[in-house]
Image 1 (tube, chains in turn cyan, purple):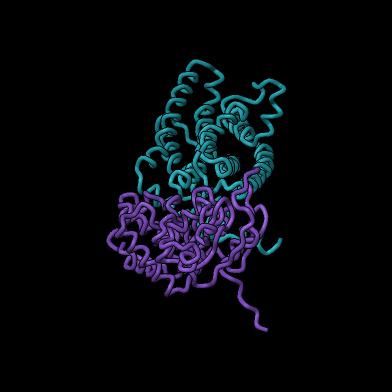
Image 2 (tube, chains in turn red, orange; image 1 turned 90 degrees about the vertical axis):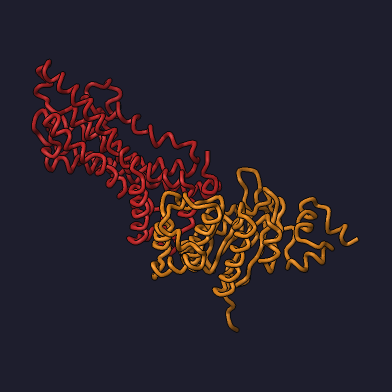
Length: 273
Length: 252
């Protein structure tokens, strides 16, 4: 690697820490931001929890498949909130017109991405951890009862959410705030395809290969397998990990290329619509 | 023979074309260490593109832009910690307090004595009593001083200023200019200043580069420009250049 390229990819814990501090100050300063992290996952969990409770008392299969809906809701929230946590931290820079200050500072793009990744976990923890305890209290569903499988599910879902968050951030840098809606809605494109609430076999045969090309599909299939048949499928998690590595590398590569393109087109100076 | 150090800012045959529209059309200049230079031009003259390229935010279509010996934007990470800028088009986060903003930027720039530096800037820029107040709750003049504090947090050797006193009342603007003058004199910093305020440029700058439609129309000391155009103020010189009337008429 040439010297300038090495400098561009050098990582500094101090600069990553500075960005995390910046987001932490922001979260601390705004209770609506903190409330926003918790309230929607709670509403989701409660709604789907009651639905599951109703179905389980009326259908034999669902009585046996206890927790698949709530489990799916909580895991989907990890995926969705992980990406949103990444993207919102990034959007805060656009909204506050601070992106020029950052791009002109010694902060490397990789460090910026690293700080956004850590903050997505922090935001997710603030929002999702209390909800998992509510799920125990309301419906007796203990997500932590999944044990080590939960670690594999969580890690794979976070990798996917980061990959997509990174790519969407690149699109916003390159195209301005006109692309902001992607940050809020792109994950819903994955919802039907990753089979959050139903098995892959529910999809038309021609669509199934596409579903299997997406890492979260393996996680949701693995979750159902675990909850219904009490069988942890490590092979599914390894397949998801392999695809996630490719997706993450692709997302990062896309971000760096979009940033390069933004420099060519002068988009970093025009971060409006 | 001793090798002379390269100028802090050097622009050689710099061209920037957006799609098919040329924003900057082959300009060249270099700035001496410790100098304050004004970059003037009407809207669309290419000032912002030139400054953004010097900052490493834009890749030149052709030509070369270097800062402190590093090619921009390719080698920007070699020198970004020695540069900084202020512009009314970029803001520091408004929800963070002044001290929090200074802390974040100080850490990004690797300022060693950060606590003392924040206190020092607080005293110098009359911000001490506002340090723990959210930046968004300050007046326009106070916010400009916060932006200036951010621009000076790392004691930059190269400082780029885009309209540093825009929308300030005359008293605050004068105060900001005085502080900039003092900083540059003490630190021997090189400053490139884009402004539409001709009085400000006349006061601060020892050299003025006037751009029009992506090209450099004139480049000299303010006094020499006034003499050459036969005008009494830089504003008159600027209008002459902007309207394309001047030099020949002045010569006549």
